[in-house]
Amino acid sequence: MREHSNAPGYPLTAGTALLQERIKKWAIEKLGATGDFDVLPLIGSKEFVAWLPTLLKVKSVIFPEVAYPTYNVGAILAGAIGSPVGVSPSTWPTSELAWINSPSNPTGRTHSKSEMTDVIEWSRRNASILVSDECYFEFAHSSTPHSILECTQGDNTNILAVHSLSKRSSMAGYRAAFVIGDRKLIARIREVRKHAGMMVSLPVQEAMISALSDSNHVANQRARYNLRREKLIPALERVGFTIEESGAGLYIWCTRNESDWESVDWLAQLGILATPGNFYGEKGARNIRIALTATDKAIDEAVSRLSSAEFPKVRK
Ligand SMILES: Cc1ncc(COP(=O)(O)O)c(C=O)c1O
Image (tube, rainbow, N blue to C red; front, side):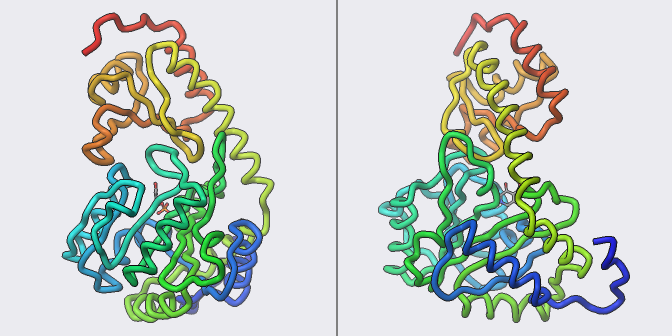
């Protein structure tokens, strides 16, 4: 990034040839992408989630019933109908665009290959756009994430996968992400983004090339997150929490069979900050989300406070 910081000209919306090549190589080697596909850099993945329905002028959007709130924000910004849905597409309404998120924020659940195939079939049957948000892909613990691109059997029509270096390479402050998939769809998105000024700065594009060319830092970070997870899980179980899902990603999703706010309040009294599950949809209202992104020191401190905490006696 430093070497390319003298960048007075406009950067390419499409990304430099080398960046495109690196993303394609990574998609084939890491995700198992097959067939014809294109790639496009993004200014972080949040802007893409928030603006895709508007850029594509879709009027109906579906997203997981316990999910990152920006899928719904995107539907609202586009003036589209947004519908939360369960995992199985057998119950999904027809919709122009569907989001899936595996590994999930907040639950850490991953889609199996057969669940991926089911959603691809749904997309083909309805001629709907299917976007798989895979930004936590590299953070596996007890379950193995699969990319949608591994399951299309080379036909990527109407299929997109979104990845972010915010999580993979701890580059949230750089704003660096990318989308991979259907060539025609990406051409359409690229054209609009070109005219809307949505381009990634050249120094950041160069930093993306460096990040994608190395996987050691990702393995180190994954080990760090998983160690924090392994310390926190028994400490949370000791004070009555049941861990649900949480096989991958950056969060522990748990419940103590009480309202999320009661759990959040109890932890707050120990000086531990957790997120109430209802932030991610009504179905999350009895769960809390614990992030593994605090420092090792803070995690150790939380574990020590949980280990000496008095187990709550009154439960609702
Ligand atoms: C599921 C999901 N998608 C997308 C994002 C956006 O990340 P970024 O804009 O940093 O790429 C987040 C951030 O927390 C997320 O949890």
